[in-house]
Structures are given as C-alpha cells and as structure tokens.
Length: 324
Image (cartoon, rainbow, N blue to C red; front, top):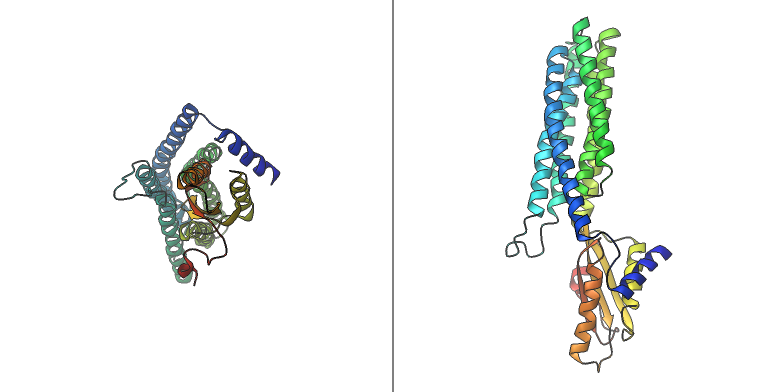
C-alpha cells in the first residue's frame, strides 16, 4: 500500500509516472510483435512435424495433440487479428477504442479449445467401448515418434520461457498455449508408448486425459475473460491508490464522493466524483477536474477516466437507475 501511495505522490508532484521512454515503449512493441510472429511460424512447422508423427503412429493420443497444434494455428490467426484491430483505431465507428477485442479474441480461442476437448473425449470413449484398438509400433515408427515429440516439446518449452518474459496479454496467451502444448506432448508420447508396450486401451485413456486437461485449462481462461468483459470492479488496493491520488490532487477538493474502477477489456474505466467550493469559478473548477483526469489516465492500468465535479455530496448517487 505504501509503495502504491509513493507512486501516486510522484504522479501528483511531477505530473507524470516515472517509466519507460517513448523509444523504450517502441522497442518493447517490436519485441512483442516478434514474439507473436515467432510463435506463429513455430506452430506451423511443429504442426507439420506432428502430422507426420500421427500418420506414422496412428495413436489417438498423438492425433489429439496434433489437432491441438492445428488449433494453435487458428489461435494465432485470432490473436493476430485482435492485435491488428486494436492497433488500427477507427474513432468514428469505435469512439472509445477496441481494447475489448483482446479478451474477446482470447475468449473465442478458449471456447474452440474446450470444444475440441469434448470431441476427443467422445471419440476416445467410443473406441474404448467398441474395443477396436489394435495399437503397435515397429522400431522405426517408435524412433520417429519419440524424436519428433521430444523435439516439439523442447521447442515449445523454449517458447514458453521467451513469451513469459512479456507483460502483453496476447503474448502471455501464447505462453499459456505453448505451456499447454508441452503438457499435451508429454502425455501423448507417454500414452502412445504405454499402449505399445503394455496395453492398447492406454492410448484412448491418454487422449481422454488430454481432453479433460484442455477443457479445465480453457474453461478457467473463459471465466477470467468474461469477468474482464462484464466490468468487474478493481481491487480495494487499487481503489485506495486512486482515492489517495484524488485527495492529494488539489487543496480546493473538499470531499471525494465516489471512486469507481471497473474492467474494460484488459484495462480499467475510472469514474471519480469530487466536491469543490460552490463559489469557485467554472474555469478554475474545470482546470482542476481536467488535470485530475490527465493524471489518472497516465496510469498504465487505466484506459479512460471520467471526473465529475460537484459542490455538495448529500444527494443521491449519479446514475442511480443503473444500480436498481
């Protein structure tokens, strides 16, 4: 809390938040773009390799992992499209920007992943019930399978470490996807080898485990992004920081009536009601409110801030109809 208040003190005194320069921000943006392109190229190459492994082995677990890689390509297109849409503002059609494209793209991708998991569960259950599996690998097939799956897993692990070094939500979504691939590749390879050496039924069981993991992982992602789209309130600590900044903004502020912050995609919308003297000239009151708005919008977590000026605080809250 004290660290947060110190940041607000610096903003109040200097008029800006100490942070990256314009050149540093541009360099970071280029690095994030490179991470996304590298992930897309790797997904395409590794998908081709896993298709070959699926054809060679015929393992349902490996096929499940390969279908997941196919969705990686789809997810790459979805996330690239959302990033492109957010970077090309259309002020007349989207006057408040397109920040919600980010969680919306992740939400669509997560829904597709969960649907894939359900389909694989149905197919694996059908194979277990019909007892059709007759799984076996010769030495060449086993060498190709192990070599390809271990190579794919290693590349994905390196991409996880690289993408997790960024704070951008889209790049972090890629990191989560790469980590998921590491898990599915390992489980798929183990299931295929157990089916080859122990019993045939272990292959569809491994596919079911992969599918359940898929549904669980992406269902949690869906819930997280739904909360960001419906306007969930900021944490109490963040609201305290905003209140502290507003109170120390100007000596003429007598009361703080309301401080709200709620999610707008990956950022917050902020609404602040401050009370100024009733006799204060409009020009002076306007300048106090506008400078406070500018301070609030300098915080990296805030997309837009709205400052309402009032002369008393005993009335009913504004927009009361919306809270009935």
